[in-house]
Image (cartoon, rainbow, N blue to C red; front, side, top):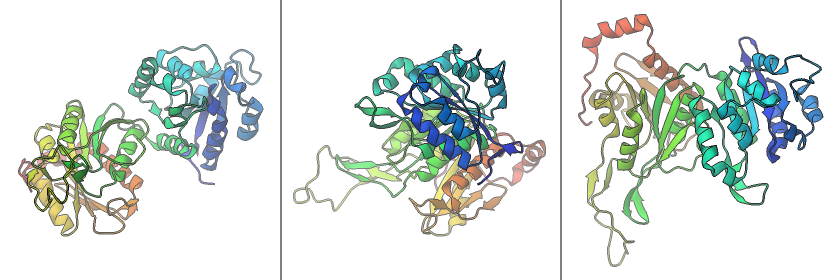
Length: 426
C-alpha cells in the first residue's frame, strides 16, 4: 500500500457524511483513500444514519463514528478532537443544507460544529437534486466556499435519485479520491494568488457548421488549472471547446473563438497575479464567415481569405507590469530555437516548449516532454504525465511570484543580460 504522508505520519482525513442518497458512495471513497495510505475517521449527520448505518463506517474505518456532541463515549469534546486531528476535511456527500451551514457558519450538530472548528483544507463534494443545485441560494453558498479556498468537486450531470436528469449527481469516486490527495499534497503556497489559465483550441467559423482549428485536447491546460487550484490559488480557466470535465475548485469561462478568448482572458487578468497561456489559439480566422452552410456545388471552398487573430500572449505581456506571464510554444522543428525567439518577441517571463511532432508530447497525449525556457535558464524535463508537468510549471510559477532574496538580487544585477520584452510578432 502506498503511503500518503503529511508531516511524517499517514494523512488523516476526517470524512463528513451528510444526509443525501449518495451517502452509500462515501463507503467507496473511504476505501479508496485507505488504499492510498490515508487514515480516515468519520462523522455523520443524523439524516445520514437513516441511509447508511454508523456500524458500516466503524467497520471500514476501524474508528468510532462521531454522531453527537454530548453523548460521545470516546471524547468529552469530540468536535475539537476530530478537527485538530484532521489534515483534511472531506464533506461527501455535501447536501444543500450542509453547504449552507458551512457558508454561514451555522454549528447545530456534530458535523457542522466540527467543520466550523477545522483549520485544515476542506474538500466539498456536492450531491443533490438539480433544482436545489441551481437555486440561487445554493449557487451563492458554493461561491462563498470557493472564495474561502474550499475545493469543490462536481457535481456531475446524469440521472438523479429522484428520477430526474440534470446536474447534481455525486462526482465519480476516483475523482473524489484524486482531488482529496491533490489537496493533501498541496502546500498552499499559492494561497491568495489569482491565476488565469487558457486551455484547448479555438474554433474560427467558416460557416455555421465548419471552422478552422487544431488538434489541441486541452489536457495540459486543464492539468495546470487543477494543479494551481491544489496549491491554493484562485483559478480562472478560459477554455476553448474541449471534451474534458471541469477541474475541481476552478472557475471556468467557456469560449469558442480567439477574439472571445482574448476578451475573457483580459477580463480575468485585470485582477490576476499571473497568467499561464496554454491554449493553442488559431493564428488565423476567415475574414468573413458565411451566415449559411456553404454548398459545394454552388459555393466552392477553393479560396478562403484569412485575417490574423489577436496575439493573446503578446497582448497580456505588454500590459503585465510586475505580474507573471507564461506562454507555450508547440513546435515541430527547431523547438528550443523557436521557443527562445518567442520568449524574446512576446515579452513574457517563461516559455514552455514542447515538440508536438513526437508521439509522447503531441496534442491529445497523456504525457508531455517540455523544456522551460526563461531569459536566464533552460530546464528540460523528462517525458512525464501531464499532471506532473503541470506540477513542475506551478512550482516554477511559485518561484517567480515569490523569489528568494538571493534570486531577486541576482535577477536585478542581471537586468542588462535579459532578453528585451517587446510586443513584436515572431
